[in-house]
Length: 322
Ligand code: VAH
Image (cartoon, rainbow, N blue to C red; front, side, top):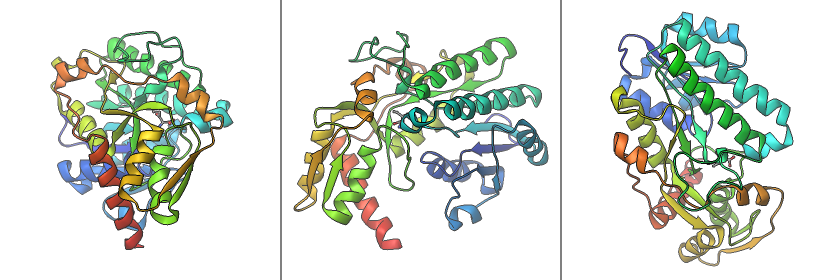
């Protein structure tokens, strides 16, 4: 954050990313300088008490403007979104929430001369006509989901606000994110998270994509570090204003189940694909993130085995805390 006096707003703070990004931002900038805003999902009490917490519907421009004024917000991390599976259940709402709120954030970013805006994109911008393996930074973007459509449109809107108004907007195309602090919910990559709790609590998981399904995935610590590093990079290094490919690991659902079974005695997994199979099949197997590596030094740390170890320990520890 280049503007040190004004505060940071995280919208969608109670989601899978926000739950871990807010503490990271608070460690770096001080708890009182990071305002966590959530709408429908309320975070745990300890999270709400760790720094300023407000409720916000980011599709309500007046409410957002009031908050920006009240707290003198100088940067926004806008994480509020409907994910791919929920977006297919209610495409109308996905369009309204994902793009309506982004437009508000960008407009207020210009109006209040904010120093930075972060908006996450996703591998969902890609579709069946995109090269599946080692998907390049710049390639065909013809997604089949409304979520993907909003991400393509949103990326271009971000680029437009940078080119037209000089707003310092930055973004990452997150792969499926794997974490245990908060569940994403409503996504296609949810199986890669659900499997761990199911393994520890029931010893069994029924996976909603088939065993051969391969997707790019990333452990949350890598995603948070990528976000912090991107936002800390000197503006002269940022050559992509739509959104950067960032990659960590790719594995099949079957390989994931086997890696869990290696560490949880008696664990079994069966595979019963539902409508999310077609969504998963439309996304890449792996991504070329060389532009992010060159521009601001991106490098992942977690491979499949580190991810599985950390997730199992984290899920067990979280269950023990309750
Ligand atoms: C989803 N996790 O499954 C999200 C995502 C990689 C895709 O952005 O919808």
